[in-house]
Each structure stands twice: as C-alpha cells, then as structure tokens.
Length: 391
Image (cartoon, rainbow, N blue to C red; front, top):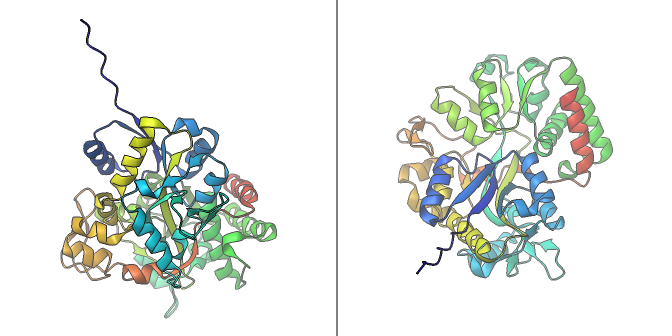
C-alpha cells in the first residue's frame, strides 16, 4: 500500500537589504526555525517596487521607513500583536513614548492600525509593521582632513557640499535618504532654513536638486552608492574624503584597517528605523511561518548580532544576554572598548580604547534631527534625484 506523500514544509520568501540579513542572520534563522527561507536581497528602490507591484511574490518584507506607503498601497496586512511575543511590550513602549522622550519618538508614529484603518501612534491590537532596529546616521570622513579644518570647526552636513573637498565626496544614491542629507547639507552651506526637511515643497526640492546638479557637473562628487558593497568599494579606492555611510560599512572598513571618523553633525543626525511586515497575500501555513519569523527576530539574538555593526535593537534588554559586558558597555553605554571587540562575524572590528562617536545609546538617539520618511512630493523627489544622478 502506497504511503501518503509527506506534506511539504512552508517555504518563506523574505525581501530584505543586505545590512539586515547577512549570512549569519540567514543561517541562524534557517537553523532555529526549521523551515526553508528564500532571501531576496534588494536595494530599497527595487524592494519597494516589487512589494507594491507584486505582493504575491513575497511573504515578509524587512524594510526602511516605508510603513505608511506600503500600508496605503494595501500590499501588506495588519500584524496581530496577540501573535507576537513582544506585543504587550510594544503597546507599553508606545504609551511611554508619549511622555516626550525624543530619542525614539518616530518608531511609533503611524504604527498602530486605528479604528478606520489609518495608522497612528495610539496603541491598538494591530500594527502595520513590527519594529526591529533603529539608529542614527551621520557621514564618514578621513582623519587626514583635520589639517584643512578651521580652529574648533564642528562637523557639519555642509561638508558634503563644501568646495574644500571637491572631487572627493560620495553620496548615497537612494532618493529618499539622499534628498534628506542633501537638504541638511544645503541648509548648512547656504545658511537658510527649510520649512520642514522631512516634507520639502516642490520649490525646495528643485532648489536642492539644481544645486546638486551644478555640483555634479563641475566634478564635485566622486561617486554614488546603493549597497554596502558599493559604499565600501568607493572608500577603498582611496580618493574619498567625505562620504555618506552606514554603520555596517564602517565596521567592515575598520576591520580592514581603514581609519574613518564617523560624524556627529552639529545640525543633528538622520534617524532611521527598520521594520518587518507581512504580505497581504500570505495565508495559511505561510502566514504561520511569517509570524514564526517575526517572533524569531524578537528573541534578541539577531538584535545582538546586528548591534555589533552599530545598529540598535528595538528592545535592547532582550539583546543584552547575547552580548558580553564589554560589548554592551561599548555599543549601548558609550564607554571606551576595554579590549578589542568583534563584528557580527567574530573578527575584531573595534580596537581597544576606541569610544563610539556620539556617545551612549540615549545620547546618539537623542541627536536625531530628522527621521527617514517619504515626503508628500515623493514622486517629484524621485524624478529630480534621477535627473541629478544622470546629469
């Protein structure tokens, strides 16, 4: 008598960026969860286009700052906090955030599904996305620049457009993040103030794009990058003096012996967050697998792993058991490294005595001037940014 065919385990399809799901994360998730996972590593623009246009082509999306956009596009489904291990903590943290704590204020904006389906920060039993990681970014610069600095000159976003570094500046190619950084640089260089850097007007976008295009045509920019690999390659070429850069690339370059200083701009940093979301098309066993993957991210191991490249986990206390006392003191308390510290892959990246620029977790997060976001005139941002890159 023939035996019934065994039921195939669900195969989870995850769209993510390489900074979130390096080989260690992918291998550990597969090992712990026990079902196959296909990871699609795409840059922000590629991932967003696929998620919006083909929600049936993925099950989980690990994304930057796009919750309001993908929720409005109806390509993701509400996440039931009753099925999330940290659901009660998320609701409690959102309530505590109303106390005026600036450090994490943006994480809960437009998070909870409200009565009429819109998103807000009033806690409910459903969220559009599940918070996982956050941090702040400045830019990187080579210590050799110190000889060209004025006495007591503060680090400034204006350095990205400063004529002193002409031909030696590299920018991120992403239009959302790039426009925010360019707006901060334009303010610093021109001395003017935009009404709302997080939601620029068409005239403000045009002014910034025109300035960038002029700079590009006269050779101010050495290059642009979409991925960590491209960012690292630009620095390794040796000609970059000032560059937009994420923490994982900094760790990789420092491990290779390349000395960089990470800025704490006087104008404030660019805050960011990343979240997990579930495709609107996921159902049945696939949906169960998606919830299992989301809960795996909440146990703290992945948060600790990525803390070693400079990211902060949504609930630091859950990551702490997976970090040594020395690692916790360096990454979260802002203390000098008492010994060489490893990156995610175990190889040394932080030399003894180094203190992370910007200080402790609280100090660094409180430095956020603006958080990554999609502007009302996003289409105009994308169009003008593309014209700039192609000029």
